[in-house]
Each structure stands twice: as C-alpha cells, then as structure tokens.
Amino acid sequence: MIRVKSEEEISYLRESCAIVRDCLKFVGERICAGMTTKEVDTLVYDFIKASGAEPSCLGYCGYPASACVSVNEVVVHGIPGDRVLREGDIVSVDLCAYKNGFHGDGARTFCIGEAPEEKKKLVRVTEECFFRGIDGLKAGTPLYDIGYRVQKHAEENGFSVIRAYTGHGIGREMHEDPAVPNYGRRGTGVRLRANTVLCIEPMIAEGSYRVRVLDDGWTAVMEDGKCAAHYENTVVVREDGVEILTL
Ligand code: MF3
Ligand code: CO
Image (cartoon, rainbow, N blue to C red; front, side):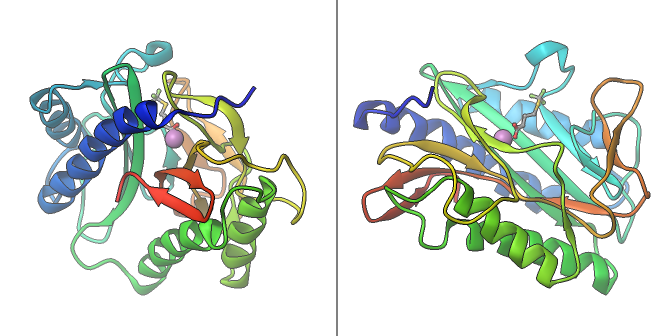
C-alpha cells in the first residue's frame, strides 16, 4: 500500500533529507585516496549524529554501519571496512538519516582523484539516468515510466540496469511501497498520486547487470567484476512536477 504524505509529514521528511544532502556534500569534500571505507563511514556517523539525527542504516536488518560504501565492482551495500580507496576508484556512498520519525535517503558516486574516462562516463550517465527518470514525472504519471526512462538512457549509452535492487517509497519506514525499478514498460504501473514520496536510485553497470552477494550477506558485486555506479535522491511527486528533497 502506498502511503501518501501530508504536508506536515513532508516538512519532517524535508528536514531528514536536508541532513542526507548536507552529509553527502560533506563526505564528497573529504573523500580521497588513502582513506579506508571505514573512515568514510565514521564521517557519516559523526555528521548525522551532530545533526541531531540517527543513521537509519545502522542496525537495519543487522547492517553493521551507518553508510554503504561501495567501491568499483561493488554496486551497493558495501560494508565499510579496511579497503583503502585508491586514485581512479569510483565509490558510491549511500546513507539514510532518521529524525522526527521520518527517514531521508540519498546516494552519490564519487571519483577518487582522476578516474579513467569510462568510469567517469558511467558516473555521469548514472546521474543523468536519475534526471531522465524524473523528467515529466508528476501526479498521474504511471510508476514504471520512471524505470522506462532510466533504462532507455542507460542502454543508449551502452550500459545496463541492475535488476536485483530497486528504489522505494519512504517515510516513517526506510523502505515503503512502491518498489521503483530502474527498468520497465512505459505507460504501466500505478498512476502516482500527489505527495507520494519516492527514492529513485539508478544502479547502472558497465557490463552485465548480473549481481552476486558476498558471504557477508550484504555486499553486492557485479558478477563480471566490472564497475557499477549508483545515484539516489528522495523526491516528492507534486501536481505539476517533483520536489527533490536531497539536492
Ligand atoms: N540506503 C539504502 C537504500 O537505498 C538502504 C541500504 S540497506 C542498509 O535503500 F542496510 F544499509 F540500510
Ligand atoms: Co534507497
């Protein structure tokens, strides 16, 4: 069941999402070669706590950290640890903040120093996929139009769309209905109502879209070992467009 939000609920979501936005910016200004993924997680934990919020991911279904830090062939849910970031890596940082009973969720993929052209293109196209996804999105849009647009842009650029993970609704729970796939047929799915809040998060692969989860039960890696990128914002569907809460 999709829970449409009141303006009051949206004002709380706006606050949680502003923390996510600012935290992603904070991390983006500091992430660099030589850092471990655990150090990135510590930046996230400290920032969210200092903002008077809680890191929603910490303890979620047993997840052991505040952020997902996913390097190169790791597409999502990379558990922070001893891996050292190197020049030329691409690193997705995905985090959620919980405040006043509402969650905000966002992710960015950062290049460490100068990344090779193909990786830079993957990061750019993944970000573009999000903006394609929300292009024309407003009350009444069929849900799977989002994925249709994301997929079209990814595949036109020679990349593939991860199928194993999707975007989602958000609110009092970090994951609410509906699932928001990054692929789909235009004109299908429920027609979205105004004040629906969605996390739209293209996960795009350089090679095949097939993913495997490591023995830690979380870390999702590309089966072919090629790179993947991830970009996510929380958005509110409005009568005449969308309001992006994490930008
Ligand atoms: N932020 C992720 C999302 O986009 C959730 C990560 S799973 C967790 O849905 F366990 F890390 F919380
Ligand atoms: Co999400």
